Length: 290
Length: 292
Image (cartoon, rainbow over the protein chains, first blue to last red):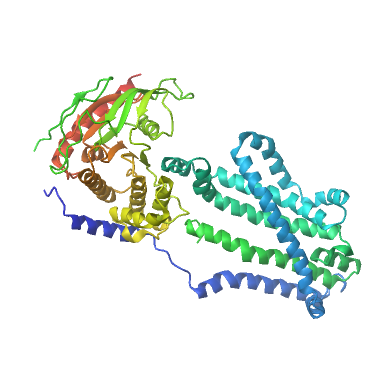
């Protein structure tokens, strides 16, 4: 029996094991992306349009309740030709993003405090979770009485909607950090602030980003509710006001256009900002769904 | 070929002075004697957990020294508190009574799970350990590459943790532990989750790295290893000394000095013979618990 093995034997064995066991990482080809990611939603949109058109042609209901898709297209073209389309969108989007950034700046330290200080968690934790289930529209009357029909009222409603989401996301992100990472960090000497920076926060990032995503959805919803209810000519024309004006004019194509634009902006920001961020973070950790 | 073992019955006072000279492949310097400060001194350590069911201690009166450059395997059935003891030495928990001295500073610790941080590449995992140790930024990259080379993963610097196999992950974890430049390496069943061939390769790598450290370092700063396992063969394959812990409460039941020269292989007859002897003893320890 050979009781010794040459170094090169072992190196070869090791290289073989590494090659056999290593997990191959492939990039999906563009055609597959188009086929599996782009085609299905496009099909769904086309189907919805077709059903809509069919209902109009069949004359199920009056024209002023369900206008032809082309009438909505016409409203869009009109806004475009007037040159107000992007002004309207930008008024709302800039408010939404600014409000979201403020919510981020407030929600992050709040989440850290709730996650790490037991007294704060016991005191604020249930309130934060409760606030998440309170529709932020409910704050609009209070915000209007406190702050008047102003931009400040809009921001107040956004904050009340988004801060709990962001804080809760960070709390659950931190709660879900595997204890093993913290132990490993401590043996490497990452304690206190260094532990938070090098171990705790990066480990909690997926939960935090999920919170941001939800925070953005809440910001956008709250803002639309606020614009819709507290609309005033002084505030500049945003999507909510556009929708409210269309309602007073009984302009159904414009109402539908308003709804579609709000939906479109919400989805676009999610697709452009949050989804890529989330995918990147999950992919580097090997957590992305196939 | 008969193994030259020196079974010694357990005493609860001290284990220093019991220097059954061990042979380390003939070339490496022998471990420093009892005069040098030990790499770790565990002195009459007790550990109770407030909520442990029967109120009995997890560890009772453990006294154990590991000499600089020594490789000690802690062996025991489940519930013997071997992981608890390792946590105490690592400073992750405090003993209820007794003292633990680690003169060389914070020991490095390797877990059964690789515990690599998935948001960092393999190389960055090693670099984080260097950074937390205070290595200047300019030197980190080269040092991390050197450590990955040491575990034969020179090309894996940019690899993500999930792209590595189980054995490769444990080798990166070993590189990261070595990056702490600690004189004491604690290992908590690090290879238990690996398949037999991979485990065999890692046994070889670990023995090689440990012997190289002994050859290159001064005797006081040589790498000492305290290796916890429930696998008798693994303990005999790796250790210069095998310490058997009894279960509930965990006590030092017996210890063996392993005189089989390195490099050993897990299939060696001498390893098998001693393993049979130790297994008998371990079975006896386990059987005691069925009697009441």
